[in-house]
Length: 113
Image 1 (cartoon, rainbow, N blue to C red):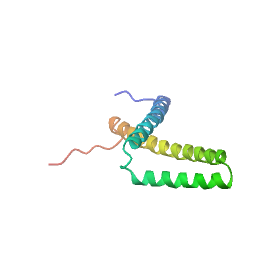
Image 2: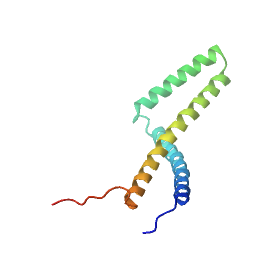
Image 3: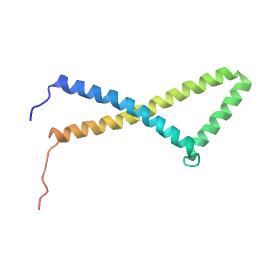
Image 4: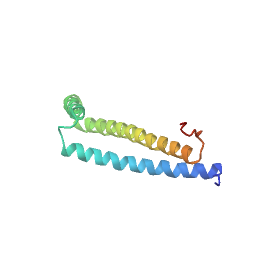
């Protein structure tokens, strides 16, 4: 079996990482669409949304609604980026594990009978 040189491996992992990021975004969109169509399935999400709307209304009274909307947008972008990073790391961990198995980097011990 021909071994990859280090630069090939780095390029392949970079490609997988980019693909994982795109896939994470797609999965987040699928999850959001699903949750919007099935509102009773995730109480924590709807509790958080209700609290968010309550805070936005309070901010709108004390400051202005544009500022409240800007705060919400920034917070959603922050939370979304973290969620995508977590998903992507899971994909990358699986990729590294798969590579370690395929390249026989992990020690192999046949079942003893």
